[in-house]
Amino acid sequence: MHELSIVMSIIDIATKQMQGSNASEIEEIELEIGALSGVEENSFEFAWRQAVKNTPLQNALHVVNKIEGVATCLDCMIDFSVKNLYDACPVCGGHFLNIKKGKELKVKSIVVN
Amino acid sequence: MCVTCGCDAEGSVTMHVPGQENNHDHSNGHSHSHSNAKTTLSVEQDILQQNNLLAERNKGYFDAKNILALNLVSSPGSGKTTLLEKTLTDLKEELTFSVIEGDQQTTNDADRIHATGTKVTQINTGKGCHLDAHMVLHALQGMKPVNDSVLFIENVGNLVCPAMFDLGEKERVVIISVTEGDDKPLKYPDMFYTSTVCVINKIDLLPYVPFSVDKVKENALKINRNLQIFEVSCTTGEGLNEWYSWLKSKVLAPDKV
Image (cartoon, rainbow over all chains, first blue to last red; front, side, top):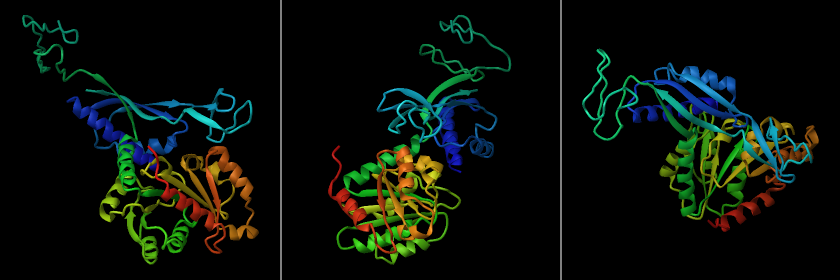
C-alpha cells in the first residue's frame, strides 16, 4: 500500500500550493500517473477516498491523466509502446531499453476557490 | 480596466456586488485577489519530490563521509538478515559497518545484528510497508556512522513498495532465494528495474527445488540489463567471497563526481 504514501504526498503538495494562493478550498486537481510508475489504480482510488477526508482535497475532483509506456530500443533506436518493464523490442527482440514515458508521477495543476 | 472583475484600476469606476465584497488592491499593476474566483494553479511537481530531496540530502552526507550505503530489499524470508550476519562477522576485521533495520514490528533483527557487535538502529514502521528517506535521515542523526564505512539499510520485507522510495543509497541490492520461484523478477519488475545488484540466496537448496538459476538470471536481465548478479549460500558460504570482493572494491573506490 505505498499508494497511501503517494496520496499523502499529493495532499501535502496541494495544500501548500493552496495556502500560497490564499484560497480556502481545492475544487479540482490534475495528476499525471504513468502506467509504469508502480501505482496500482484500484489501491490508489481506495487510499484517496480515505486519506482526503478533512483535508482541502476532501471535495475535490481528481483527474488522472494516465500516461502509457513508451520505450526506445537502444540497439535499433526505435520507439514502441510497452506495457511491462520486461517487454522486448518488436524488431530485434532485445531488452536493452530506455523507458521514455510511463514513469510519470506528478501533480500537474490545481483549481482553487 | 481589470479584465477579471471590471474594476477600473485608475480609480474612477469601482464595482460592488452586495454580499460578495472582494478584497481589491490595485496598487501594483493587476496583482489583486478575487476571493470568489476560481484560479487554476500550475503545479508541475513530482509527487515523490519531498522524498527525493531528502534522499539527495542523505546522499550528500554519505558522499562527504565516504560511506557506502546499500539498501537491501527483498520479500520476507529471503535471507536479508542472515546475509548481513554473515557479512558483518566475516569482514569484521577489514571494514567498519553500521546497520539500519526496517521492520513493521519487533527489534528481533536489530538484536541479531547487535549480537555481531555492529552498531545498529531499528526503525519500526508500524503499519508502513517501506522505509523512506526521512526515516533514514532521522536514524542517521542518532547513529552517526563513522567515515569510510559501510552502511547497510535493511528495508521492510516487501518486493513492491520499497521500489519507489530512494533512500539516498549508492547501491540497491535485491535478494531472492531459490525457494521463491524463478519468475519472481517478472512478477515484481519494479524492484528489479530499480536495483543495481541481485543476490540469489540459498543456492545450497537447489537440488530440492524446481528453480533454475539460468531462468531467474534471464528474467532479471530482461528487466535490467545492468544488474550485477551474485549466487550465494549463507549456510555453506558458497559464493560469498565474490560478494565480499565486490563490497570491498566499492568501499575503496569513492565515486568521482
